[in-house]
Length: 284
Image (cartoon, rainbow, N blue to C red; front, side):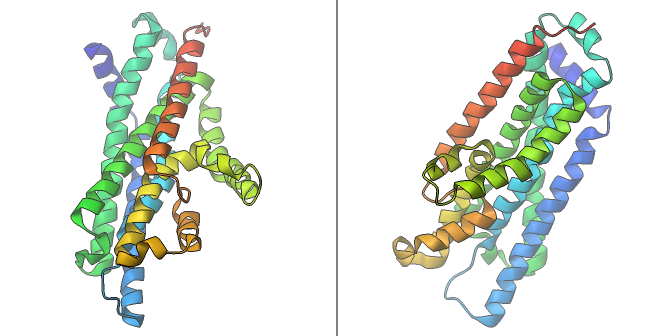
């Protein structure tokens, strides 16, 4: 297995895909961090609060929820790209059984997904410092920042693994790119809007995109409200939470760990589906 994992890392780093998709992750992280701290500075200029406004927590949530699509695309293309380049035949013939190839890709891609997650949090931190002029108040407490950062890294890794499973399932480079983009930014967005105030509104937190976003957002939003409202947090109106979730992802009243387990279910389904289909697919 060690040899297979090394081979997968060699394939990854011999192409430009991994760093080409890393660039927008870093830019989104920096931009979200800078924007968040700049807004805090603007708020402070208009009205002085008696406590810090940790908008940096929400900035990480925003950058993560946009950046995870690049991790998913990377994971999907590592498998579907082999079918496009017709290297999958050699891969399978020299790496029996086929399931071992899937496991090796999952291990290698999780490492890259980890680097994407760390880059996202790092650049969001740098952007926040640049926008705030080295003022750490916009990051919240160290514990809150580390918790949200860890959730962001975890979410990035899981989206990468889901992408690998999806790529193994469809084995088509075009579908591996178009379907995740269209679903996350169009289909689920429209579906979520249609569910608002409907009898089926309760299923919204269990949709794949909402669950994936909720890993970070359902942690960051309550921490932000608690930091801003202080002892009055229990009296914060529901509308305030829903407004924040509308922009930064997640669902009101849905714990982050529930989103995590929901999304883990989707990851498991796609990986299992990719394993079943790829094990029977004709590679000639």
